[in-house]
Image (cartoon, rainbow, N blue to C red; front, side):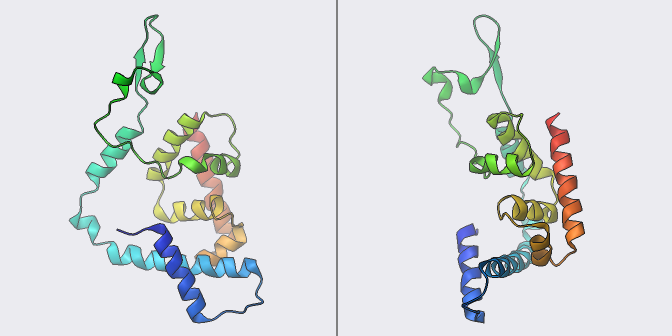
Length: 183
């Protein structure tokens, strides 16, 4: 129902409407924008919470999880190969839409932020999709600010109005948990 760029644009408009110091440090402006969007998202989640009782997300979740599965077959030498690697066009005639993985283009960012270097891109995509479904919303918000927003612990603490030690601990636990799922 909502598009991320619309929410960001609305946050920028609110920032300008409130007035700002034209000579302000860009880092301060960045934090203020994150705060505005964070507050807007919190309000949006509260406003739309009633959908949890009116809209079944189970089917959506099942479809998403089904799309994360790795399906194997055997070749003529009875070696296991992924179905995705088959080159015959008849194997690629899916009648369903391809699943959209929100974090496809950001695997490198996540691997760098979580200091992970020993997993394949396909495996990373599948694990990351599953990992984000396991995370509580408040934790994934902090992970997103760290990985994609490239904010420090202190900056995240200011955006979320919590202690920086708490941000650091949440991220440590999230990274540790993610690495455990790689094993």
